[in-house]
Image 1 (tube, helix red, strand yellow):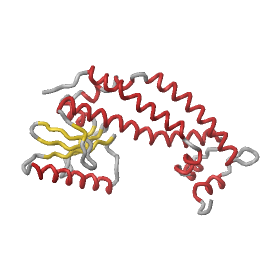
Image 2 (tube, helix red, strand yellow):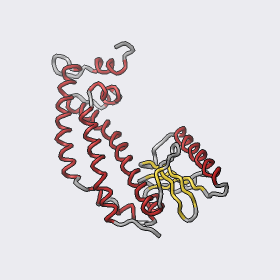
Image 3 (tube, helix red, strand yellow):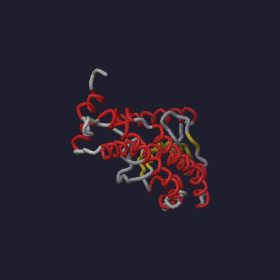
Image 4 (cartoon, helix red, strand yellow):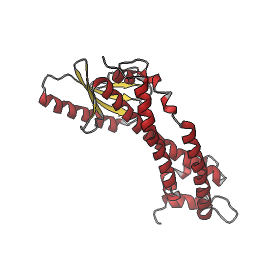
Amino acid sequence: MNTITDKQITEYVEAHIGTFHDKRLEALNKLRLNVLLRRKNPYLFRSKNLVAVSDLIKSLLDAHLSSQEETLFGDFLEGLAIYVAEQVHGGLKSGATGIDLEFVKDGARYIVSIKSGPNWGNSSQIAKMRDNFNTATRVIRQGNATANVIAVNGCCYGRDAKPNKGNYFKYCGQDFWELISNDKDFYTRIIEPLGHQAKQRNNDFAKRYAAVINRLCAEFTKQFCDQSGAIDWNRLVAFSSANTP
């Protein structure tokens, strides 16, 4: 049985975690006020009684970054999972629609759709994943009618007490990482390497974050504050929601 060493994990993380941080910083640098305002609900922020421009901008920016970082880090974890399966099972990144990873284990052909966490989609998105599993299974069985194909929704964190979903399995957190690594403790082994250069990376990000806050506050004050400096909520709502420019 093949295994993956701590050295291999560390080397992969150190070689690829920088991409996550670089994309995170790049996205922050590219952010524009009009894009930020149109993507967020102005009624929500009015209901929170935000009266200082800096508080409003920080709340808007943090909400935007949180969802964006989840996506960016999900891409990193997907790459890590594929790498682990490659080393342990000779797996590969799948070319099938909606399938991220394929590998053979104990005589079964696994097709895997990787997600960050367990609560990733609505009923329509889950139905689409099921369709992708069915299509990929049919294609595999065209070449081998007796192939034992096991479809898996693999989630990098979280848990699911009832993994059998009928035509696929949903393995989360420890269960998912054990499936692809053959190691029940693997989910904890990746924590330490993820901190590689984290302090320096986050210091760099914090400096740029402060600069962006200052820039956005100045732009917002000019466009959406009255002469007294108070936020003009009517003007702000009109910017995002009025049916005329």
